[in-house]
Image (cartoon, rainbow, N blue to C red; front, side):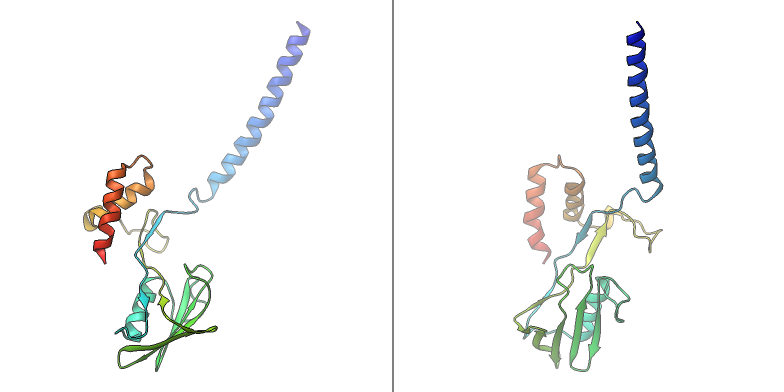
Length: 182
């Protein structure tokens, strides 16, 4: 009987040790932000090619909506600089793209050329604009996301991300309909 009592105390001691250890670990994690990442949905990135009809201000507007800043190092996503002959784009460390800058030369509203540090480019893909995030950004604490203002395709896409049981027919409809959004 003494052996059983000793074994029980030993098991209870080991259980208590690990219970307290993992309880403290969980409590520490819950003190900080619970969700460090969020599901984000981006629009298709716009591709600029020589011969496209676009102004430098239009490109700056698209980049600004994507989180780029006019001043260097103000945004971790990237920065841009309007030039007299076009726009200089410098993706940052949190950019969707590689951190290689590009210069787009525009004359009379038409893209003349696109170049990077490695030479001329046939095309340049701008930063995709975030359509929605499933967590509210700190900069917009009172912003709300209403599915009524968004298309059914977007609502289905959000549901597909969050619900792995989402039916394959609705998911295939989403894929088929996404080409109509262009």
